[in-house]
Image (cartoon, rainbow, N blue to C red; front, side, top):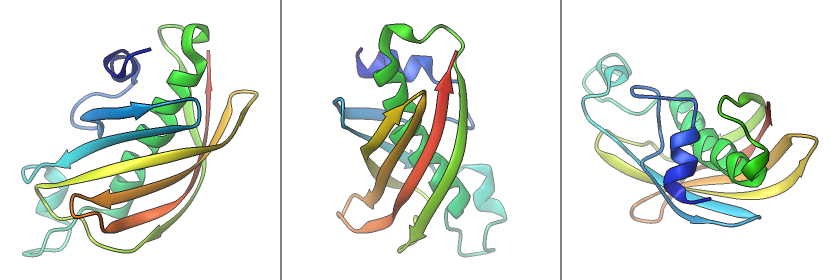
Length: 143
């Protein structure tokens, strides 16, 4: 399955789609990126005069690329048109802020995938290679 096919199967759309590109995909790992555009509405109220991307949005970006996209790839032909997707747990450590107009790169490594449950170790870096956040995210994907 190609990167564009995976992205087209995501159950999200703007303004809640946080995947611009998938640059590598395998049975055990996926890497993708997203640019947090300055005009996103949450920047208006998340720290007046000093906007940063909320941690919950960073977590969502990591989950969309690192768990949902990888899950779609792993399910392959078994996945129908309208998959059911749910996050089941997160354990994320935040290390650096993400500012408006900053591009992030998410790399996710599969810990396990069985009975529709996928657990991954996910890392987000900025374009300078500095680690922004990391941790574990688990989710379920099924028909």
